[in-house]
Image (tube, rainbow, N blue to C red; front, side, top):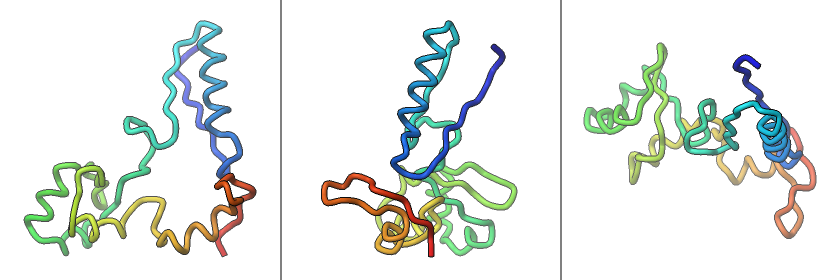
Length: 130
């Protein structure tokens, strides 16, 4: 088999991780070498789970010292910077977190619209943003 990329997508708690693990295991058992990256894995090649995107104009609003820190973990893009939040701390982290990819809403607003959970924290169903 030539190189293939399988991406398993779906709403929270539907079994994406289990499905991806099953596909990887099945392919390995049939002689195909696979690389499995669970969502949120630090070395995931296509996941920006703990990254921020700061556009060129917004980047200029940071001080020179802050820009130097941000550039240490930046992936430079045409229209801005993808910044790994893993090395950002303190007040700078507080400034950058509002640019976080995926989670632009404050958590106290977002969780109400994404997951409904039972008392044990198990996912019951997913709702769309209102």
